[in-house]
Amino acid sequence: MDPGVDPAAPEPPEDDEVRDNPFGLLPVIVLVVLVAGGLLIAFRLRDASSVQDCVSSGRKNCAPVDTANTP
Image (tube, rainbow, N blue to C red; front, side, top):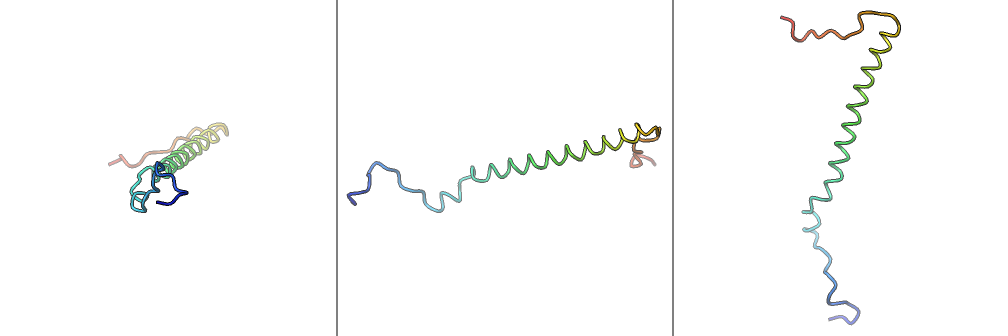
């Protein structure tokens, strides 16, 4: 036993234990979800803004036409 080492101190984790820790990946996943949500909101706001610009310019056919459900 080394005289400068505290026997009550925990040993550093092995490399395998560090790689198996899922909490290191959790912040990355949360960040990706937040960025994706922010982009979704930004695109929705852009679409709403373009419709508002169309209406404020006096046009009456500003709503997008959904052609996916037509036979």
